[in-house]
Length: 250
Image (cartoon, rainbow, N blue to C red; front, side, top):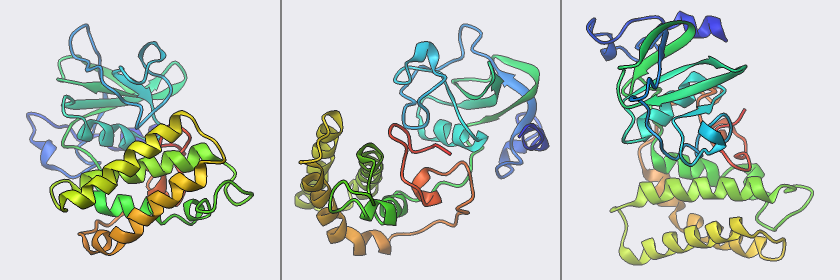
């Protein structure tokens, strides 16, 4: 893994390399420390659930990540983040999120980059449809079974799909339709807080009805190109259910 990190060694900043595409815009042998001033403390639980500050991924400047691209995607999606850094700390590959590059230090095995240096974003509509149409999620439409043994992963995937749907449809659909989108989001969140096999198929069927109704619209939206082997992509874009807590798990 380190050889891949160090291979992306082009400098950004005064050399103007930030205009390069990812991963050429990544600077090698550089870590961005907090240094008492440069970290942001935000909810990173959508991207990681371990290695966070004081074990609280709802308020952290760092998290464990399996790929540097996950770190880049996290920074690009968080408003306060302007720079990110990725490398090994305490035996784990870790992402640091920063509000400047003021904590810059030379460090073997680490890389750093500005917010704009990130893998190409996948459109929200494409993310929503890909997650909802996963065969392993469709197997859960009838409820928990041998084909759908893990309710937590299924619900986590639905939450991801609905979140992407909300972002895709924001300002694009009529208020009545958006009420249904909001409702399934609230119902799925409530179910995830107190799951039961009895209510599982009811929540899932409601989700499926809304997504089926919007499938044509979602499919008509612009799509991005991606490689399903890209480890920086969320699980659904790699053909797998989300983890029970995060959708960026290998």
